Amino acid sequence: MNVHEKKEILAKIENCSKREAQEILANYFSADVISKNKSKESVRILCGDEASLHIRLTTETLKKLDRIKNLRAHKNPGMGYGELIEDMCQFVLKKIDPSLRPTTTRIGSAKSIERKSAQPRYIPEKIKSEIYKRDHSQCSFVDKQTGRKCTSKYLLQIDHIQPVSRGGKCAVSNLQLLCQAHHKFRDQYV
Image (tube, rainbow, N blue to C red):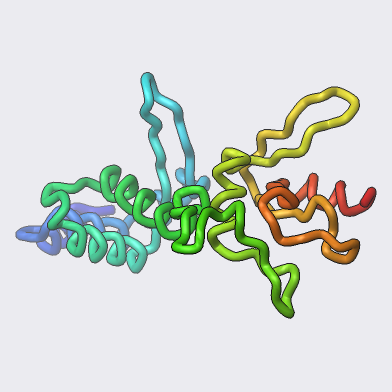
């Protein structure tokens, strides 16, 4: 790159915000950046209870993050991206994690609820919540030979201990959490 090109770039980034300058520079030097950073994400555990997360996002995703940050500014006006991700995690988990949902109903507790409908495999949210809390949001499979319990929290599925096809009910006492692998494994032997 010659002196004239460098002056041209400097003129373009003059009076720009940091992000605008980064976008302009990325357009000029993107081939170098891409060749050095082939990995899209990396995680490094730091001291204490902290970790470093390095990810590559599209500018559209970054705009969405900024929009969310602006919408949540009433909670924390000076929120950084780390705090934003923490806030988003809390928000989403409250919405989708069955173990964080309330378990009691006006009728009584989820333990007393038994589903009687045309869809015997349907499990109400109150019962799902009770199962997740009871099983600590992890697989409850125990190996009969070693006595070791699986503690996977990945791809959890609710399993009927006594299958519906054999008269099993949709009750807390007849349901358990299993990871996908143990659910498939159990299905082969039931």
